[in-house]
Length: 273
Image 1 (cartoon, rainbow, N blue to C red):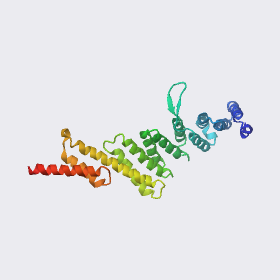
Image 2: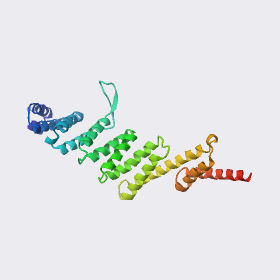
Image 3: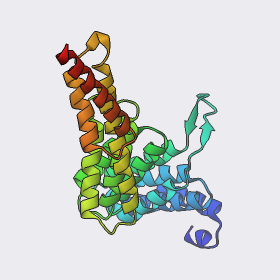
Image 4: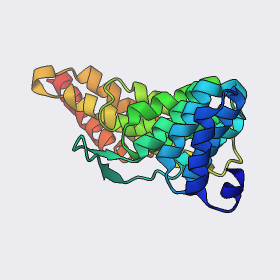
């Protein structure tokens, strides 16, 4: 079997490794045969089937195989599933092949949370979920990454990507500003901790984005309290003042100042009369 594999006859080697797996009573040999089947299937450009063999080897024979090497092999397989759609010929549904990558990466994190490759797997799932616009899931992954691996080399990227996912999620609605505030806190910590990081300029740009979003939220609140049905000029004035004071560089600061001046003139006229 190994000779056939070395010669590149992967289909033949696959069949021989299957026989070894079925007939051997030695657990180490059975586990190794499964891993070898995965290797052959990978060479045959069958990454999902290869993962099936690796998963079986890990789940059934973990203590009898080169565990960390198999997890590394799983991680490499996950890279073969790009952002494209496939149709299931039995269920007649369309799915993203990246979902298969997520299944592989989640398996790595589940069975080997303290393995060398686990932080990379968790981070990549977050990136995939951002690409799929599943920001809530991405946020969950990045938070978990920072909690479980705070000193890992990917912690910096995880912190920045958490902020990015939070701001993207906030675009759909952030009533009390919780998401933007968490994003800003994450960005501030990134900027303070990693001034030489390659993505430092990206962090600064995200800060401006966060400030713009918060200023817009405050402006919406001010406008709400200037409506006749909800008229509370003191509340509106407070929100407009916050924009002018804390976000002078935002695109809404100029409008906020105009509205604030108008509101103050109106109040002055009322007092005179």
